[in-house]
View 1 (cartoon, one colour):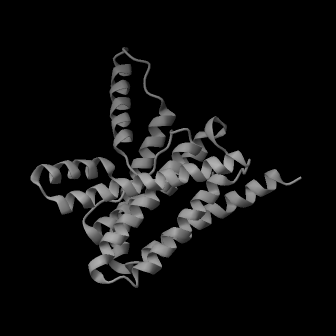
View 2 (tube, rainbow, N blue to C red):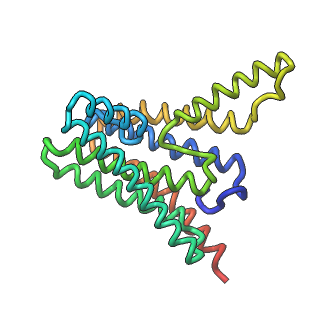
View 3 (cartoon, rainbow, N blue to C red):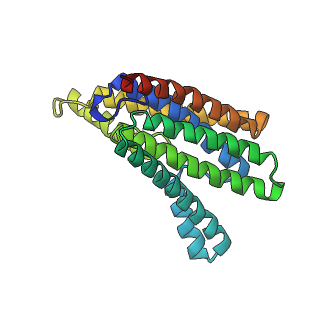
Length: 236
């Protein structure tokens, strides 16, 4: 799941990647909202909020929205630099290492949250999650050649709408119909993000920062097999 990249990947592998990572992203995004009232992965909403706050002269709130956009971008930047360095060194497991880095940083954020004063807890948490979800989205985007994105669903909901329109047109004999594989992939991703969000809200209320440690453990469990597989493939 984290070794093969680009067009060497099958639809089944992409679907596994989509539902597992979108579920975790949905849970973390919901946890950030519960903690601070802002979404960590919804950059469309954050840019819109930035515009609103600037227009209303609410500078402090505008800075918060801008910080979320920049930390998400910084996460994507770091993931891309890491992956580029791994490719340059022909490290086959670089995507798995990127996910493992996300897991380690997420666990660190969860542990840090236990020591933060209440006044700072929500803001630090949502910024940290924004960085990590940017890292995750860039990793998934590059390994799948942008077929899968796991931290937001706007584009996929749009594509599902287009696909449904094509399906209706096919019944009228106007269009050959949508790509069933892509429709299934997008549907799985949206459903997983939704289900992860529901679980994330409930788990945050019950577990608090422990949710981040659980999510980090799940990410590590997905990364380690990829690292072992890559080592076997590169060993003489």
